[in-house]
Structures are given as structure tokens and as C-alpha cells.
Length: 394
Ligand SMILES: Cc1cc2nc3c(=O)[nH]c(=O)nc-3n(C[C@H](O)[C@H](O)[C@H](O)COP(=O)(O)O)c2cc1C
Image 1 (cartoon, helix red, strand yellow):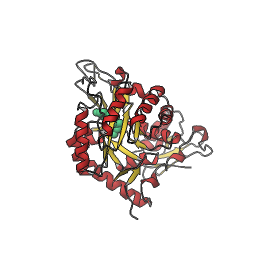
Image 2 (cartoon, protein in one colour):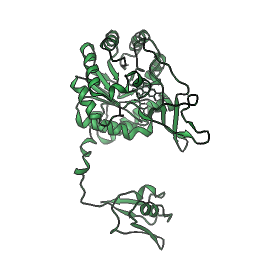
Image 3 (tube, protein in one colour):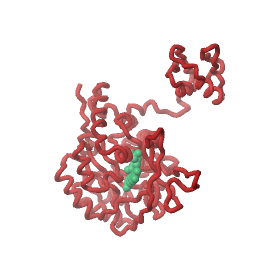
């Protein structure tokens, strides 16, 4: 069976569901041009603001988290686009002339003033952009001005601005939500009530990467000072998946899902929890626009292997399995099964079981013995076995 990656969201045709997220990879027209040549289905422009909004950037702007020399996350304190509104109006026209099949979404942010938001929207209405993404979610710099995440953590202001935008927008409006809230569904409902057409999630997760214990300076060091920043990349994927799933459980609006997508497998998971398309930022910065090739091929092959005609067949597949803890089926225990031909007798499973309360495993005469009286079926032991000798079965 041949699967198609083509999809249609709110009347917008996407040749594939992979978009560049609003971020440094979409900060320049020539970069987006290059990304489109390489196969990206679309781009959300680096957030456009009114020309008179002051933005003073800091240096340095990034700290990283590594795992075995692989960067698995950024903390950044970068602000928004430094290009003028006119630059973007001209650029969108150029891009659309050259790449008429690619989707361009204009990300926007403005002070909490009706004229400021509506002015931006009216100007961008006159471009061939396919839609708007309202950035209610940048966690650094902008909240101090009462915007960015200061909007997206307040249901009333989120609703008010969405209403202003919808009054004048001539294209679909996606609202980009912040994960830095107690209940993302609360904000989802507020903007849905204000007639948002779609949602995007997540923006970065507010964090503090740490300090250098030798110098006692912050890892993100701006001349000896630091600020909380936005965390992104593989390390935030569980938060992004959780947010998208919670939004999907509460709403039927289209969702542009993102947060830590590095591979086609990550993208497929985002679709399975309810995304209609996905966006990528950090992995593009780390590995280049060229990652789109393997992502397209991987997702297409996967859909075909599963017998899915398109991404709609995969969408929401994980949702019905996610329930409250109260509703989990709790009658059976998944005891560990140890394959003694594979087991290296290292004792790691014994240590984790013993120091994590249950003391159900012991190494006896070269064999791992499971005490079923003590085992609670938590499944932790299989993750520390370097030989893959432990499985859990109900
Ligand atoms: C350096 C940097 C700058 C960003 N700038 C913006 C921005 O201008 N507007 C916006 O909506 N999101 C911005 N983001 C957030 C990304 O669009 C995205 O929501 C987030 O990074 C999660 O995706 P990822 O894990 O694929 O990076 C930025 C992210 C990074 C790392």
C-alpha cells in the first residue's frame, strides 16, 4: 500500500506535515528558501512584532544539557524577530512566488493593545501567508513586558487577544500555548471559546540549566548574571507529548504539535497523541535542515508498514489508552522474567529493586530469583539490565 504524507488542515494544503517551528531556523527568508528546497512542508516565521517594540538581546544566549556528548536540550534566552514587518511582508511574497505549495504561517506578538495586535494582523492579511500563529508563550524577556508567556498563563487575556485577532484575521488563527501552566486545558478552553481555529504546543519550558561548580557562575552566563530561559529539544519531549495529549482530550481543534522532535518516530508519536502536523526547531539547529529527508522517508515507510493510508489514520491512536490513574486496570501484576542465558550476573537489577523499596530480587547461586510475595510489578528492573535479560509479562 502507498501512503501519502499530504494533509489538509483548515483548508490549507500541506504537502507533508513537517514544519519548521518559529525560531532561528525561520529568522531569515533565505534560510526558509533553503529549507523548502530540501523538502520541509512549511515554516512558521520567527515571531514578528510591531517595529517599535524594543528588544535588547543578551550575550551569551544558550546553555545546553548533554548525555554522552549528545546535546539533548537547550536553555535559551533569545527574543523575537529583529526584522521589520516590511521585511516579512516582502519575504512572504517572494517565498510564495518561488514555493507556491509550501505553507507559511506568520507568528506574531504585540503589546496587550487592540490596535497593536489588529494592526499587525491587517498588514499581514495582505500577504500570501496561509495563517497566523499567536505567540502567547515565550517564557523569557517578553513576560517582563506583560506579553509572551504572561499572556498564555492568563486565560482572560488569552481570550481577549484571540477575540481581537479573530475580528480582523482573514486566515486561520492558531494559538501557540505555553507548557508553563498548571492546567493547559484551562487556556485551551479560553482560546477555543474566543474562536481560535487551531492550537500549537508547546513553546519552550521555563528552566535553569545550572551552574559551574568550579567558578560558581551560571551555565548561561551573561556577564556574571543569568535569567530563567526556555528549554527545548529531546529533554522536553515528554512534556510536549503530555500537553498535546491533554489538549486533544479536551478539544477537537487542529493541533500543530512540537517539543523535542528529533526523528520521524518522535513525529509519529506526536501525531498519535493528536497532532495534525508537527513543528521542529532544536534538532534543525543541531543537525541542519537536511534531517527532513530521513523524517519524510521514515514516516512514509512506517505508515505503509502499518497499512495506514495517511497521517489521519495514525492521528489520536494513543488517545484512547490515556486515562486517569483511577481507571487503570490494576488487577494483574507484571512480574519480571529473567533469561538466564543472557543474564550477566551483574546485580544491577538487585540493587535497583532493593534500594527502591521492594527487595524482591536476589542473586542466588548465579541466578536472579524473583520473590513474588515482595514484587509489586513496577517494571523498573528491566531498564537497568545491560544484557536485556529481563522482560515483564502480565
Ligand atoms: C533559540 C530559540 C528561539 C525561539 N524563538 C521562538 C519564537 O520567536 N517564537 C516562538 O513562538 N517560539 C520560539 N521558540 C520555540 C520553538 O518554536 C519551539 O516551540 C520549542 O523550541 C520546542 O520545539 P523543539 O524542541 O523542536 O525546539 C524558540 C526556540 C528556541 C530554541
